[in-house]
Structures are given as C-alpha cells and as structure tokens.
Length: 457
Image 1 (tube, helix red, strand yellow):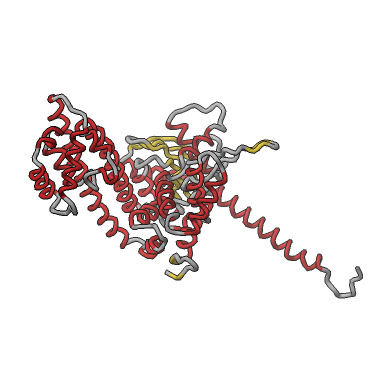
Image 2 (spheres, one colour):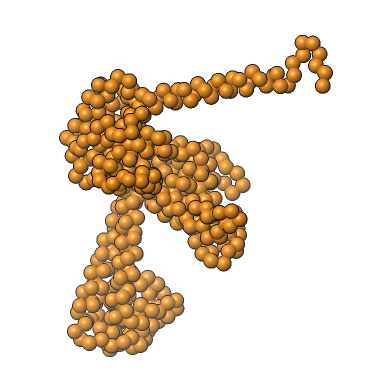
C-alpha cells in the first residue's frame, strides 16, 4: 500500500489512542495502589458478648494490633477511640476499611455505629458485611492456620486487604425496619402453617373422617373456621354428634357459622355421616384431645391477628422508604403487597447491585459448574450461598408470576420439559432468574410492568 506524503495511516491514527489508553490504565493502577497503601484494614469477629479486632495495613503479613472490646455501646466507643488513636499514630493511613461477617443480628449495631461515626467519616470509612461461607473458603488457603477469635479477625482483615470484597458497603438501617417486619411476618406465617399441620394430627385422633374428607364430602369449606372450631371443641366425642337430633345440630352450626351455609341440612347430614364413619376413642382421650385442639385454634386466631397487625406496619413503613420501587413491583401480575415488600426489604436500593447477575448471586440463585476435560455434569447444584430470605421471596413470587404471565409460563414449561429429574425445582429456579432480570430492569429504570411495554413510573 502506497502512502502519500503527509498522509496518516490507520495504524498511525490508532497509536495516539492506544498510548492514551495505556497511560490512563497505568494512572488508574497507580491510584489504586496508592489508595491501598494508605488504607487501614480492620477485621472484626463478632459474637454476642464481644468483638475481637485485628488491624492490618497493605504491606503487613501479620496483625499490627489485636484487641477485644465488649459488644455493647461502651465497647463500640472504645473501639472507635482505639482506631482513631492508631490512625493518628500513622499519618500515612488515610482510609479505613472494616470487614465483619454477616452473623445474623449480632453485627448490626457495630456496623451502624462505625459507618455513621462522625470522626471516622473523615477517613472515608467503609464497613462491609461479608458472607461467612465466602470467608470460610478463603481461610482454607491458609494451610497451618488455627481456629480462635483473633485468627478469624485476622482472616477478615486479610480478606479485605487482598481485594476479595465484591459487595457494596453497609447501607445503613434505612431498610432494616422494613426487613425486620417482613421477616417477622414470614416467621408468623410459617408458625401458622406449622400449627395447622400439627393440629390436624389431633383432629384425626378425635374425628378421623373430618380431617380426611375433601371436596363435596367435607362439611365445611374452611376446616379452620369458626363453625369447624365449634364442632371440634364444643363436642367431646363423635358419639355426641351422632346422637344429637338433626334439627339441633342444624341450629348449632347455623349459629356458629352466622347463617352463612347455603344448605345447612346437607352440611349437618355430612357432619353426622363423617362422625358415624370415624374411629371411636377411649373416654380417657376425650378431654385431652379437645383441650389440645382448642389451644391450637386459639394460637391460629392469635397468629392471624398478629399477621394483620404486621401487614399494617409494613404498609406504613413502605411509605417512608421508596414508594416508586414498591409500585414497580406491584405492577407485575401475580405480585402482591407481601411479596413486593419482602423483595424490596432484602434488596434495598437497587443501585447497590451492578447487574442482574450480581443480584442473582446475592440471592444465591447461581449454579456451580462441574466440568473437567470433555466431561460436563448434568446435575449442577444451586449455590444457595446468598440471602435465604430474598431467595425465598423470589421463588415464591415466581410461582405466582408464572400463573399470570404467559411469557413466564411458557419459559417454565420449556425448562420443565428439558430434563427428567428435579423438573419443577429446576424450572422454577431458572424462571426465577428470568424474573430477577425483569425486576432489576424495572427498579433500575423506575418503570412499571406492562405485557407489551414498560411505562415510566
């Protein structure tokens, strides 16, 4: 190729750009290295009574200092004072990175305290709550390391020092109030379900046919309603129901059911038939079983009332956080207030996640690849090394969404038909990943869901 005098080739045009990119890259690396050299890394091993602390700088291979403080307000003040004194003795350290494990609720107070400390803020303090499984796997790289609180604190500090932290810093307690409410509601809902399942065993012993009949053969549409409760607790035995005149039994169930039965006579007849077909009990079991069943009904009533009260508190808390994000989730067919609040409380601000992949990893909806040479395993277990509550809400929400959105239903059926084992669990988990992409896009762009397009929230 001939090049005229004064002309510039494509290669020559690219040289200044590539040179600039190279210099820019070197500047970024230099800034990062300078930032690391001026950082104090703090590892805190949390327990219910104490916080064990280890200090590292970038070049140290062993802790510069280790000490322990109480896990309470005076201990937190002592910890902050100790950090300030150390930083004052090392003018070269101008940044503070604190790493601690996400150990349920024990680390909440110290993370809040250090991240909001006014004096420590001048050191650009960043507090990270790390996944315990990730830290445990990193600790395995130390061959001869023992096990005690000071060693664990050193591992946390070293984990931060080598740049293994990928999550965002502690975001404060803005969503903590909502999270405590949604998690408590889930606890109540699981307790309610467990109590109902437990009560059915006592019902079977007292009134065997009542607990087994379904559909048109079941006298009551709700086996845990007031009418059913009166029959199971007002009568000591099934013989009393069999021997009771039909008219009297009709009056009894109408009174307890507030006259809501379409055909009271048919209901009473079904009830007496079920009583005749049930096993007979020894008289010594009449009263104990009745007391147990009545107690379970009281607990169910209490759980139901508490869930309603918590629902109101969740709604009130949501109004002070991010109503737009809440409306984005509610716009998805199949997502109700409970699921929307639960997902939002665990995600927090969506800008804490770089992409939908990082959100999926945070929820533990990722799979471990098992491949070597030409071999690739068909069975790849889910990681589950993430937020168990968020994973629960996402899977539950997906099971509802696929029943309302044709796109998700088709995707679920496609994945269900691809394998012959773990069909439902696999299809639901993969559909949940698709659902994650949807909610990440809606929340990041502040848009509402529509079947054919998205609209601005």
